[in-house]
Image 1 (tube, one colour):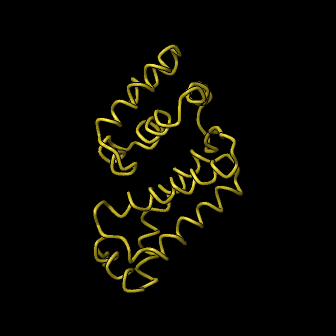
Image 2 (image 1 turned 135 degrees about the vertical axis):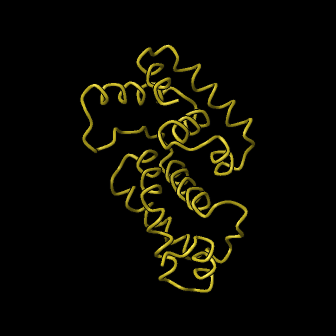
Length: 176
């Protein structure tokens, strides 16, 4: 029998490691995807991935349920990525996903990533979470602890700045 997420959270908060592992299994792919998009180096990715779940395990008792558990985990992951970026004092750019995709799609994604390099951090983060991770405006607002209007504004800013890239514009329209 598969337990509801809220029940797994309650059990995890009581120290049940098995329940916590079940929560992790439900969300690990999404966390890894976010970490992958924000971090270049595979070793850094692995470290951040482990840090996220270690931090979540240590702090699960503090989870109040103000947002979805997945959003809470994503916030931890994003914070870890930001911490690494600050630590390095050098902005890192995205790399293409390693999974096999057709060459035409690969070229379009490469154009998107090149265009994203020119965006400020706020618009770039919102764009990545919305278009590459498939998150809604409300989910992004929860994750970033801001208003949905701010997210919409950041997305608009990102779209305007990369509109000059025809391939990117076509890709945005295809994913909208």
